Length: 280
Image (cartoon, rainbow, N blue to C red):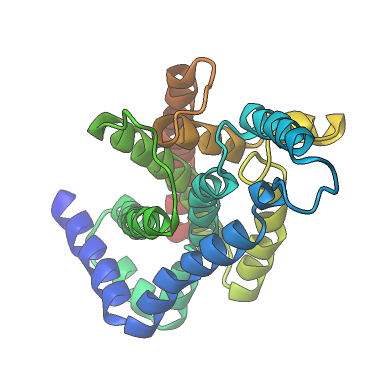
C-alpha cells in the first residue's frame, strides 16, 4: 500500500510542479495578500505624533498610551506581523478548500476509471491526494514565511527550531482537516462548479469569523461565539504563539485537539470517500 501511495503521490506532485504558470501564481497570490493587505491596512501607521494638533509632549503621551493598548490587543506593535501570521492559516484554508477539484477532473479525464480498474486499494487514492495537497501547502507556507520576513515580519526573539516545527504542525493539521473534507466533496460530486461554489461560500465567513485578521475579544458577542467554534481561530492563535510569542492559555492542549481533530476528520472522510468510489 505504501508503494501505491508513493506512486500516486508523486504523480500529483509532478503534475503540480510541471504546471509552471499555476506554480508561479500559487507563489504570487499569498504575496499580494500579505503585502497589499498587511501593509496598506497597518493600524500602527495611524499612531503618529504629527497631525494631532496638540502640544508635542501631550501627543507623545497619547501615542504612547495608544501603542500600549495596541500591544495588549495584538501582542505586537507591528500589525503586519499579526495579520501575516494569521494569513498563513487563511492561505492554508484557501488552498485546501479547492483541493477536491483534482478528483473531479481526474474522473472527467478518465484517469479515475483506470485507477478503479487497477488492483490497488481505494484508500491509497484518497491518502495520496491529501498528502500531495498538504505537501503543496507546506512548501507555499515556508515560501510565504520567507517573503513575510523580508517584508518586515518580526519573529519572537527566542525563536527555535521547535517553534517552527510547532507552527508547521498547526498548518499541517488544519490543512489535513480541510483537505479531507473537500476531497470527500470531490468524491461525492461530479460538478466542479458546485465544489467551487462551496469553497467560495465558506472562505470568507471562516476567515472573518476567526482571529486571523483581528482579535476575537473585540468582536460583538454573537460573532465572538462563532469565532470560538472556528478552528481557524485556534490555528491562527497557535501560529502566533509559536512564531511571534503572543500569549495563549494552554497552547499544547489546543495543539493536541487540532491534531486529534485532523486524524478523526481524515479517517471519517477516507472511509466515506472509499464507499463513494466503490459506488462509481
